[in-house]
Image (cartoon, rainbow, N blue to C red):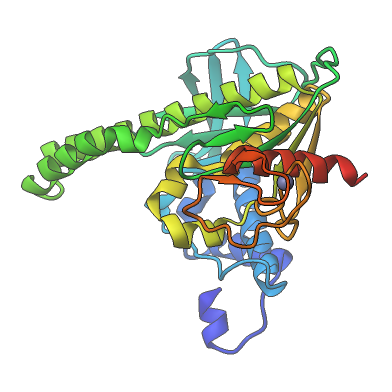
Length: 338
Ligand SMILES: [Zn+2]
């Protein structure tokens, strides 16, 4: 692809890529016959999607990964694999030197099935994570709904960096465990150990895996907290109002801490949870004034700076916590818009 671009040729679409791939299989790259053809088609489609997005100015220029960098393989539909209990059979193709033909080669794998799935399987993905572990992801047509009883309550939630992760309009403040911060010392220790080792050696790889495992643990801890928080919010409230995130601005201000708090991941989880439990999630856009107006009388306090965590309204004299005041304003703005 990149070569075509350099030669000044137009973009080859999916069909052209597929034809080219088939031609290469016949001529210079016979070993590609070993790959399951549906999975390869899926990969070409992914590349095509990425390029179309790039042309529509929706994303950056796609990178074509080198062979050993591939982390997953996807089987759409039901061809090329079979699952029975905790055994999966994947069909590859093998060159038979006797008959001088490609023949099917079924390879069985055993996996640890940690949960049941419902519905019929639409897609199967085998993934390899940075720790070198393999995961089997199964996508089914099952829609998970579990409507919770209505509580008649609404809440506004304000994301914060300083005092609390999430401040609710009820006055409650949720603290984030910040797992990366907790593990930084250990991580630094492991990185030092890694740098002492000879690159590519056995003990070097051992250290690389150790670091990958720590990162995985951190990300699991973070996700666990997010799921629990989202569940709690869905159990307590019918309508949840949040502010649309301005992540670029936040990252510029705060750096690594934003990634550790992972606001976006939390919103995604909350969105899924709300649709599962039949809750309303409303977003207030970032141009709505939420911090400066007094939630009691509506007076705009233009003198408020980022440093002011508490303030007293000069108009009505009520004392405000900055974040709780903002959460109440968010709730109000969210309910006002239909
Ligand atoms: Zn006031």
